[in-house]
Length: 194
Image (tube, rainbow, N blue to C red; front, side, top):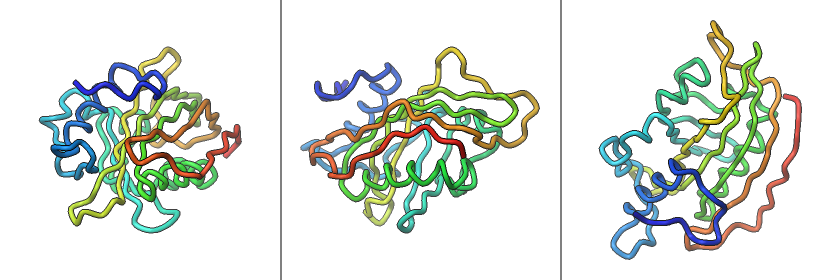
């Protein structure tokens, strides 16, 4: 099992397992960025339900390509094929997109902690480990995000068909060096109403 670099922040057990799977796909010298097709259910196993794969088809746009069942359940809908703006609103999505676009422009990882307050009284407190992926053509335009939300206070209001973000608190976000350094972009953490 590949351990995360020693200068990374502490990862959960799920995130460490995800990093190890991703690292194993980096080729014989461990420096390439994996293809999405290689991140299979057989390799992910129990992690697949917590995984979301995003694609950045153009600047400022972030589409959910694949979403695990746990992620769909958190938001009360199938996220696959949706623009992230339609899921969490433009105000909350804008900084999320900018942060994650850096993973593709300058290959790096990302670690985010936030609290998302959902209409109807639900709350999601989660950390996300995001790692870049190549699409079938070899373009670096995707990232895989593993959510670890197994904390007390995680809930979604009952009988809510769609989950709209009312309020988001960013607890922390940083880019992680996967062997190419980190981008110059500085992510500003804000508490904001959406």
